[in-house]
Length: 243
View 1: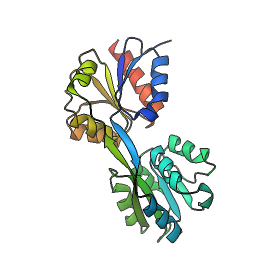
View 2: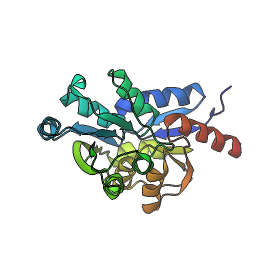
View 3: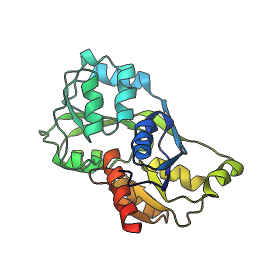
């Protein structure tokens, strides 16, 4: 059964993270177009090492697999004895693959929900390694619960540039869906000046959808759960409703 047969879907997540998503969609009959809109680069590695060395943190919070990757490129996993909270299943798997245990995962896979539900004690120390574009919402919520929060940007999200010719080659054909897995991919999309016509936009979660709407992009669906698998399910629903 190929419920996405005849559908063309643009994938905007970074090239090193897109393969599984592309394989899932193509196995369901879709034609995929890879348009990576961000690349990631580690930063503040010495600052991170210093923070870990100088303070014992009760909690480490990871809100993406990128945060896990760049954190443990600098920090020895065997040196970690903090509790670990993650935003979702993929981030949990990334932690477990390096031999550590996850102590908390929220009921909904968003950073805000994690901060609201995390069972911290007063004056718990909390470290949030994150991207340079991450918002401060979760830190503010945790500080409101009397946590002592330190956020460190450990990687940058950099926009990928394309020529008008490259973009025309992609968008001068029939495209059914454009998928976004982060607010930074949307911001890069807007910078490129791409005009959305009849393409339907599918977002991985509410924060990504919020960024899309703030930039006047109509959102057709939001994955629930907020995972790649959830996005696939939403694409199947949209496809069946339009056929």
